[in-house]
Image 1 (cartoon, one colour):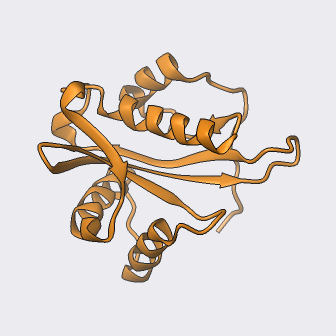
Image 2 (cartoon, helix red, strand yellow):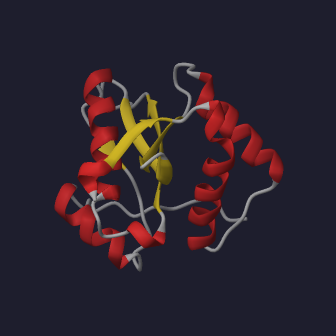
Length: 150
């Protein structure tokens, strides 16, 4: 399947399919967001502003089948920006066909083009399927994520 997959930037015409894909992603992580977050996130993805989120769609035969969101940001340990890959999702019926790899590789290419020397992301420890891919194309770090208590 990966030969037939095209990766391209998200456009205004993608809103309905982007919502479908991102809802699938949020459902996978057993969460949801209000309409305001959907609208704001989509607008940010389209803004093209420096230091704003960017998004790519994976499609085959003109049908969106996956997405990735990423952000370039400053880092106190480097002069160059680094790239944070925040969301990665492929429709369940195309998982294991290389779509996720193509989306990550597209982010790697965007990072290279922007002069960002590193791309990083997080996932749940229990996300074994995705971690099989991540172990092949990335390097697990010893860092543990913490966040403010609600």
